[in-house]
Length: 115
Image 1 (cartoon, rainbow, N blue to C red):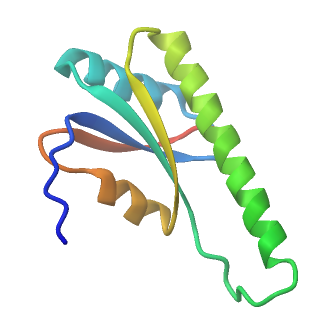
Image 2 (cartoon, rainbow, N blue to C red):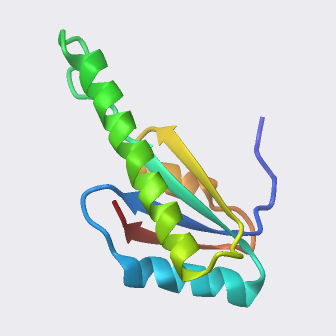
Image 3 (cartoon, rainbow, N blue to C red):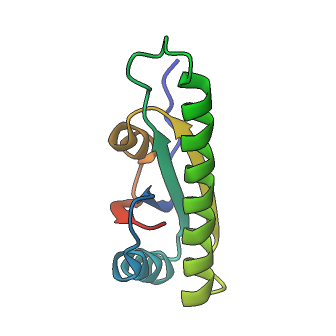
């Protein structure tokens, strides 16, 4: 089955390692200027050697870190512009692929470090 849905939104990839408010502000401005919503996406990469005893714990830790980074990015968006429609997604997979997979139609896509 092929996903042919058109997304009218600005898709933003979030990296939990550091925050980039200027890049996030640019994405917010683009969403406002174009009348689009903002979707913050973060991918949790597969664990190398997933057979290790601590793999489930590490995966849970990475997902918790991802949720926290998305929450911080939403807070930054709200501080910049409270009226922007914003949604978040924490996905399993390689981060660049997760962000690219969410990009459909006339919307815009960019990458942001926030967290």
